[in-house]
Image (cartoon, rainbow, N blue to C red; front, side, top):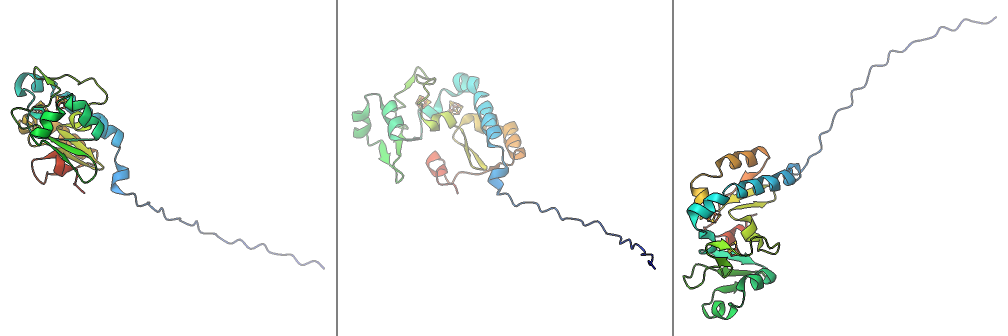
Length: 182
Ligand code: SF4
Ligand code: SF4
């Protein structure tokens, strides 16, 4: 005789798999492409001010941090004078700093208060960046720049912070120090 077999139904509870959020380093969360575009926009926004009101202060005062190639491009046959005035110093990382605060020696590429190599792709990086520098998830505005002093970058500061950047202050009023920001 065949026994009837009762089927047993087992209620299986749905298993909830926990969602694990990966820990992403802060710097990789930032859209650096957007940051670069915003920096370009911010720098371009002060073009008129640089020309009409400032008079190229940054090309006449301060230090430029340069690679050997950039230094050669700038000196433009004035190397002897720069040497004589002791304006060039080599840095530990192999770059150079060129002092352009001497009244006899503004940047040799400054012509009639305008940069004569503005469109040259080899123009020094510090010139392309000034007065707004990006480094990883940080940004820095040079306090030497009158446009910064007059608050021309306020709205961009807010936008950088929204992108996740942190504003840092310079250790001193020199872009050389900025190279050491951690
Ligand atoms: S110091 Fe600032 S405002 Fe003056 S020319 Fe340079 S970037 Fe422009
Ligand atoms: S290279 Fe051009 S932008 Fe740079 S300091 Fe000289 S004149 Fe100014």
